[in-house]
Image 1 (tube, helix red, strand yellow):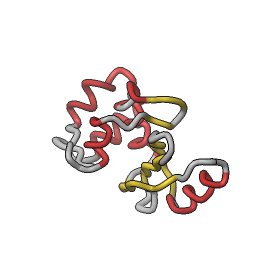
Image 2 (cartoon, rainbow, N blue to C red):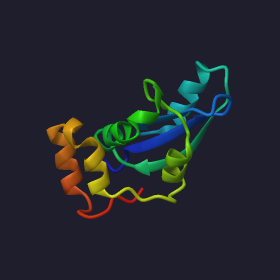
Image 3 (cartoon, helix red, strand yellow):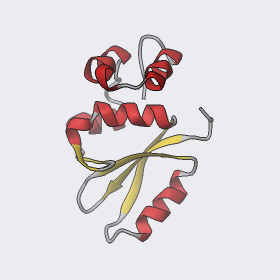
Image 4 (tube, helix red, strand yellow):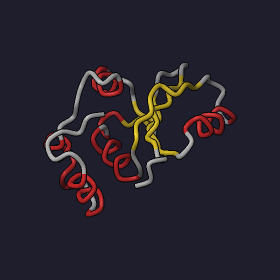
Length: 118
């Protein structure tokens, strides 16, 4: 994983939906998304991470998926974004274990063994 990769959380200020994606340049990604959107968009958080962490987060919050990479911003996702909730690896695995790929499992094992602090 490159240190330049970031997971971004971009909010559509009209609908409240949040796009969870990855990019080496979240500000440029925002600009690209903004061009195709009639609503104002805003980066509300970025964290280090690449494709595997993005996929894990997508799977963890799949019950909030509206369409594609856009998610409903409920209290659970808001707490996650605001760092009010640390997701333990065991809770991620409880929710997503059967759906994780070999590389995603390998990624989880390569990071902190007890907690995934985001």
